[in-house]
Image (cartoon, rainbow, N blue to C red; front, side, top):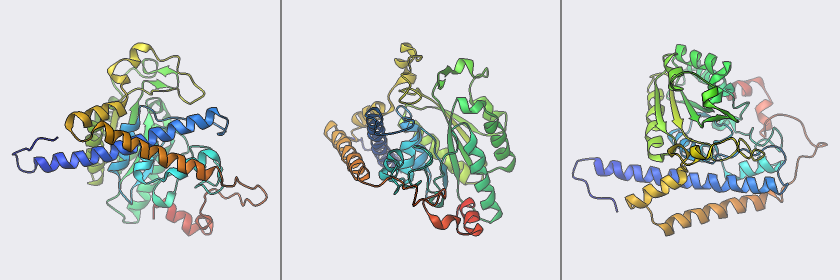
Amino acid sequence: MVQAVIEPGVSNKVSSMRESFVRAYQFMVLARVLDDKFASLYRSGKIHGGVFLSRGQEALSVSLGVALREGDVFAPLIRDVAGRLAFGEPVVDGVRTYLGSSLGPMRGRDGNIHRGEPRKGLLPMISHLGAMISVVNGILFARRMKGISGTVGATCLGDGATSTGAFHEAINQASVEKLPLVLVVADNQFAYSTPTSRQFACRTLADRAIGYGVPVQEIDGTDLEACLKTLGEAVGAARSGRGPQMVVARLLRLCGHGEHDDAHYIPAAMKNSPTGRDCIKVAEAKMLSAGWADDATIALWRERALDSVETAVSQVQREPAPDPFEEDWRALACERLLEAHADVAGVAAGI
């Protein structure tokens, strides 16, 4: 168990970290189980289109999700299942989107990963190649013009996305305007199959933030405790008016770019390096060593995650697919969103 500490306030910090850590870990496990189920459904021909797994990036993603709060804007990408869940997305929404249920947030359209609830601050993804940064910037700028303060916008991207024009234009805009933006870069060593050695010549991706006057922190993306601490600090700095913040996390994608990719290009030495650690196993070792959980408790949390996912899949498999003769072809599940221009403006402003 955790040792008693004499210094005032330190024991409370330990307790707080334990609660945050355990909560984040449970979302990580739920995300991993959900991803594994999607992979299984894909291989059995139940999912059409691509399946892109978060395996290896759960600690980084969940840390951003738990750092944000109601009223913030989050633009998750293809490997942000854990962050989505922590931000409040129901498991059933992901299952409905992948299985094409007409009851899902996108009503069975717009692809497997382009789902969201704009009125709840969860933006549907346009592209994972830096395109979402300018969208978040626009919402934050609209809020400023409306006098809305105290909220943060965040999005994630991979190492490859930092080489796109969309990234450079948007981070420059955010810096000039001092927007409360948080950029989380998963430096997962490969842009699809292109290694970082063939992507950029700077010392580290952190240099790209420095060039635009954006504060940046670098972390081990396999370490949940470090991710929670650093993402919490970055979100807090942005919320307090210190402008955009960037976090670069070194980790390895523990799977192919998608389920169609066998990742044969990833060297065995990299898989066996500290960068290739499984963040879930690292988190479990931390909890066991700190006395925050035992093997039986960890097994119980996993069993509950399995039950939650299987229940959602069983429910969605009985739901109807879109009917083209009944479809009104509007983009979002909530028809009221497009009934008037005022509603569209309200969504863009995040209200």
